[in-house]
Image 1 (cartoon, rainbow, N blue to C red):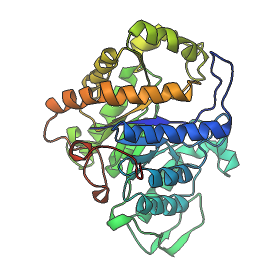
Image 2: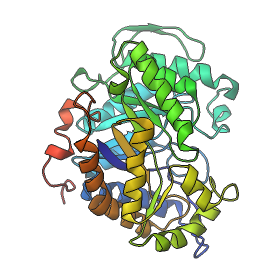
Image 3: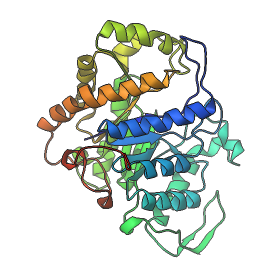
Image 4: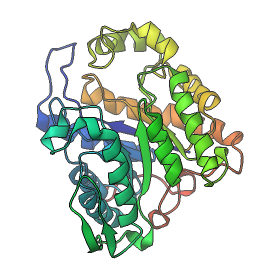
Amino acid sequence: MQFGVFSIGEVAPDPATGRAPTEHERILAVTALALRAEDAGLDVFATGEHHSPPYVTSSPPALLGYLAARTRRLVLSTATTLVTTNDPVRVAEEYALLQHLAGGRLDLMTGRGNTPNCYPWFGQDLRQCGALARENYALLHRLWREEDVDWQGRFRARLDGFTSVPRPLDGVPPFVWHTSVRSPETAEQAAYYGDGFFADNLLGPVDHYARLVELYRTRYEEHGHGTAGQAVVGLGGQVFVRARSQDAVREFRPYFDRSRFHGGRYSLEECLERTPLAVGSPDQVIEKVLGFREAYGDYQRQLFAVDHAGLPAAVALEQVDVLGERIVPVLRRELAASRPASVPPGPRHPAAGPARAADGCPGRAGA
């Protein structure tokens, strides 16, 4: 089981002070979050891809390349790579190169994104998003597995005998998760290729995401990749933790109320009851995350958002520390105790070395 944090790089004012960080401050805060995740003994850091305000994470390859040089154990991932508006040839090239630089510690989440205004900026039509996702990923999948590729589709220039370089490290392509908030088509695409499925698991009711995961598991087995229980599932989640639950709720409430995603639609109490949002003491967060297994089955990766809605950078780092010290060790132990031997571990490139349970003490390269 892999645990980590992800950031979408949102720039938002702190409701306590009214001040928003500069873009420069926010970029440095995202990198600090990843470095702290490795120091805290977590397994994964992931970054989103956005091309408009109020976000700063427009170039995941650049950010993850920097982090690859600063870390030695952390798996680095996108969350999400826009498979609809990125040229699959460039995706194949950039992330294969990054995979080499990171010693295999790289995987991708592909998706359609949730900012439709970026489609015309990259010369695409939002009405074609489903077809773009299918065609572009089909080409990316081939480029990492074949040489001398001949290709002709609807959305890019044809390829004749094209070989993407560099080739994936040791012939093993980066692991791909197909991520979705609501799309059954994305779950089907993940199952068809035998890839991982990452359920957003943030804003909707738990039973909504459970249906997507169940569809993916069923179709994974029907496509002949293994049993439904062997399908590779990842989940998102939002947490805010303090030693006392009442302090966590009181401190987090103004950030929740001003959130671009939550504010004004539901109360904090409604979201805590119906969605995967976890705000409270370490024990309460542990209990809620352990409950995910009841809804989704045994899964391979759990990522937490800890720097959303204008939370100060220092507070986000505190959240990472609490995860590493108080929450993740308990989750590892509890989830491992009843995990069937048939369930595969979280994906990790052979060149990346052993998983966390067999690793030495965590730390940054050069630390």
